Length: 190
Image (tube, rainbow, N blue to C red; front, side, top):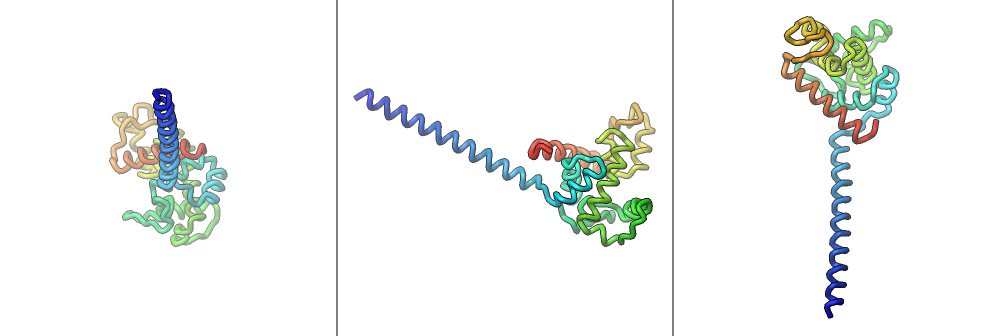
């Protein structure tokens, strides 16, 4: 009689362990799907194309788009920045001059145009500053502003990295992009 009870108990424990493992796997799969819905890969054809063309990691471009517009192609900020990567019309016009392109401000709402010029500008900032966090600050606050910060020994001890970011909006932006960038790399191995 005791053997029968032990056998039943053993079977119950094995079944319980199997159920717990299945539940853990289901939770992990569900959580992974949830994370991917929070960190999507939208506009991937354009992101892959222009990230490659301008020497950027796709994960970085997705992180910038997520932080700037949350993938809303028609996003417009209070300051007038437009589209997925939130380009200012003046920056867009300046970028077009060297390529002899003739887009209008409204064209910034087209995903391909916005990602193309956003990647170009982001690449310029990464090349100019060499430090990703500094480049992101320039993308957000403007190159002139960041140049001024880098000349200030209270903000930059070496003229290349920012030990302090004076604008809370820019600091929060850089933190958010860096967090998203790491998350995209981890989630998608890109």
